[in-house]
Length: 422
Image: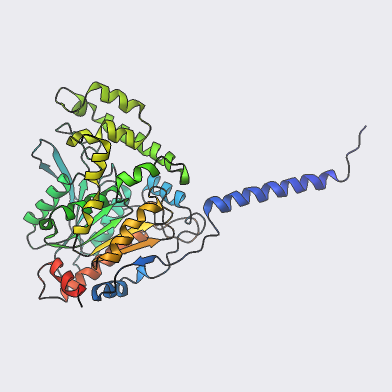
């Protein structure tokens, strides 16, 4: 009989150690555990208002510490947001309102009254635009609304046209990347229903593009607006489309998953969009939808046709806020994350350059946070309230207090111009 070499057990032990070391190395790399934590990178001009905001919003100048085990991975932050939205999110009670549009569509939004007095004693309303295909019932929206209500804010949340599964479309059209019609209708309603209120405009991801475009389209849209906050948007769909086809940071995979979700939303309204009432959509468009594997294919075959754009390039050019955002004169906070797998770093030159040129803009770039993640927590389990939620409310509070100290100013734009020169 052959005898086992006395060196064999030692060799097996060595192989086991090597395997364990390899697994640990992969985990460390995937979870980005060696990455340091840091305070956000802030770009803005040195004005009296910006100095006041950075002093009042100390969270912006302090180190953002994500959950120790997985929080430094933009993929984990994004996946957790996408799958769970938030952990133990509240259930704020609101009222759903329906607004008929000129083209036969029906916009809907949910209205949530404040649960206490605002720190300034004023009537302030958050007008909120969620991310792609999202609505007021999403966990991250519910968490933010619940927190804002407790801080004395009324909240109005747009439900993107076609996003709510239990609300039928009343015209052959649904939400698109930069259509501001529904958001504008909601804001107009709030201004009529609450003539004394002042507005804090908030947009998440695609919603960030919509709110910045809305404010920049017409100076009248900035009336009664105290400030605007945009989180994790991409600024230019035309420049982003090429990056969405790359495998860098698995962006192509995210593109496929988001396209699949868009397919489900569109097909859930197949009767309204492709039925006898529709003149813009054809059966051929429906067949192309089934075979689409990217958002760009869906945008080209379906989405651009809702507003009669002749090409995908034209659609992206006209619906991106990059061509309007420089017209926004109210205080503007733009927040992005360096490890956001959906927003390529090349797109971040847009908000950085804007903040360098305009007095009213602050651009905040975190090292970690993923796409709409920004979770906080000790090791494994994140807290329900995120860094993002705290930043928005903290910034809004500071703007409201600043405005309260300026009785001679009747519009936020006037205050910005006066104090920007200080």
